[in-house]
Length: 192
Ligand code: AMP
Image (cartoon, rainbow, N blue to C red; front, side, top):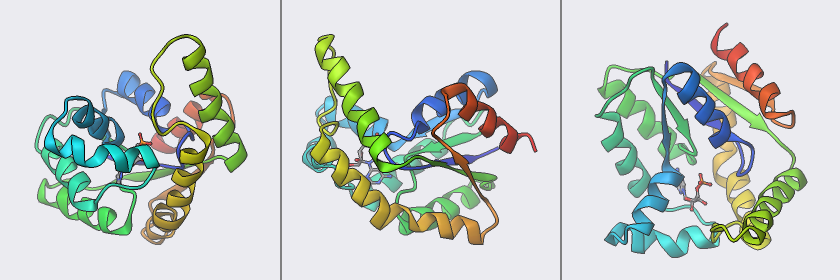
């Protein structure tokens, strides 16, 4: 089973993907994690994306599609969870084509809905806690960058809600509950 977790930054996609990895043996493909790894290891691509990410802009479709293409050719175990990808209509089209090449399909797209002020509070609050504890803080977890990331989401990613709805793949769930409540809502979608 291959699924997309769709939702704005801070909606809980990464946390829920982690649960699915543990409970169902799925493979999490987070383009954000892949890009941060490239940036931190100082590859040429990492240098190109560092400033773009710090501002909260999207990196080019070409770069993220390339990252996903590589990973789709590897181990697929219990299926893929796409987390933070696709983020544009061009990425969604590319994903459909890449899955088809592998003889795979997309089973379900789950949208996590959370209001903006909760998202900003969650991300900025988490960054402040980390900073107070002397832990590393993401360069794009300050309020200005978070608001910019949200605007990028509404402009470029939210159209995917209609795209997947039209394909009969979309289920929207309330992302405001506790982690366990959201986990149960996702399980109900995947097991129906
Ligand atoms: P995330 O960890 O998913 O919030 O991603 C962090 C940052 O990485 C985003 O703000 C973008 O700059 C970049 N990024 C991650 N995934 C994508 C994607 N699919 N398309 C474009 N940019 C991305």
